[in-house]
Image 1 (cartoon, helix red, strand yellow):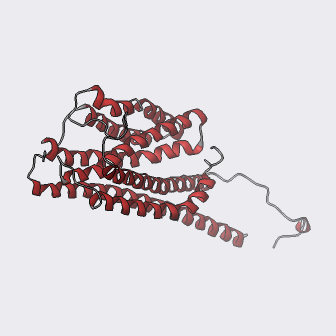
Image 2 (cartoon, chains in turn brown, cyan):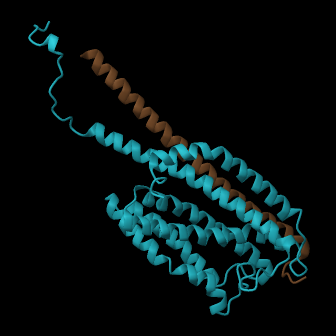
Image 3 (cartoon, one colour):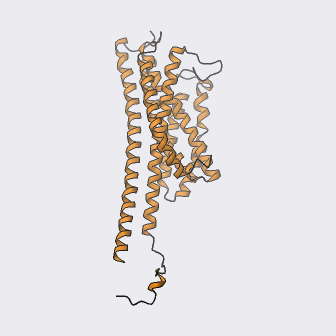
Length: 61
Length: 257
């Protein structure tokens, strides 16, 4: 076998590579989902505020 | 094409598409991991270390592929000024940077036991590192310039100029003596690996493409919602135009209480 580390250590390199990929891709998906949820909620909140403001203005009138 | 690239239509379409994409992503990822870790043989020279290939190579393909998408979206943004083109280009950049970082780190982890070094300044590795800097520079440029149209134009020009790095990445292993091995899948004469290794590699690539699609849609939705909120805030902050107060004809002339 043409590898420069002892054969019993190869498993650690494989685990490290899959770990890096899992953290990277998992973080990417988690961040994207959290961001989508955050901004959608913000839009809904602002829309709700504007609706409340309009209703208050109508009540005042 | 333009008909489908409308923000409202994009949101409606992705609403319907998302559950299917998520299911396909999980299926491809599960199948790919099974084939990569259990269903494929070890290599006669590298032994079990070859399994790093199934996370490293698709990340490398995605890093270049996403950048090609970034260049195309930037060109569309510059030429047709389409509202979704620069939003989608800006959305792709951090995703591409993640794939490039995964490619570089897993490549380094693979390199140490195989070559005896974590890093070498050879053509392939250096050009992929430049790709990471291009992604980061593109995102930084967007953030640095306050005027949106100006930022979109400057970032698009940077992205298109950076596109020259893509053929350098692809052909670096042919043009220069490198530590990195030559192409073994996308090459003349067909893939130089058995189907038992090529199949898991392609399934993992499909999983990466679906991960990209899901992350891209979520980030696009976030970006569009953010733009909508900023527009709503700008409208709310703008001074209200003086309007004539509507009064029904029946009330005209009536004394007010």
